[in-house]
Length: 142
Image (cartoon, rainbow, N blue to C red; front, top):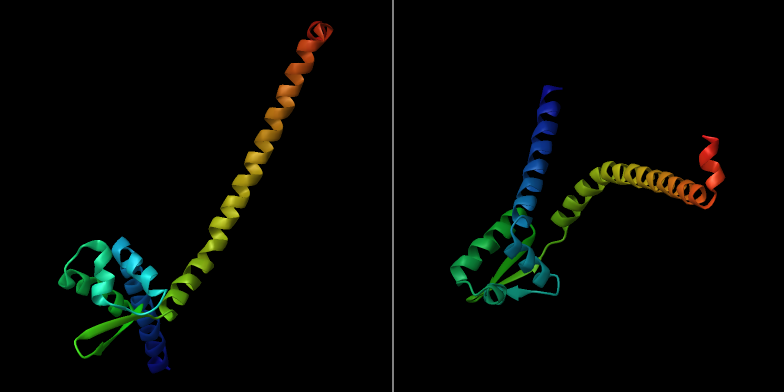
């Protein structure tokens, strides 16, 4: 029983660590642009580096972060390092966002309702002032 509990905890921690690595990799705009390029097909490290005017060593550091996160897979063909997108970690990140999206969607729905109610109250107030200005006898009734 204890072994199963420990096994579940280790598996959950491992999953959380992978998700942490994905979000760390996605936190950098250069790496996000590299992923965007890889969405269109395989690229060499040099091709990934080109738009950023960075050295191959600099690009390699970004590629390693993407590899550690599982977002890309790198294969070596001779002296050429080819990278390709691995979608599974993105699906995990998307699932994490979908779970929490219900909370912000509820908040946005509540905000929309409150703003509509405020707009309606302002419109009623505006109409009331407009009709009072058109009918001077209403002012003497108060």
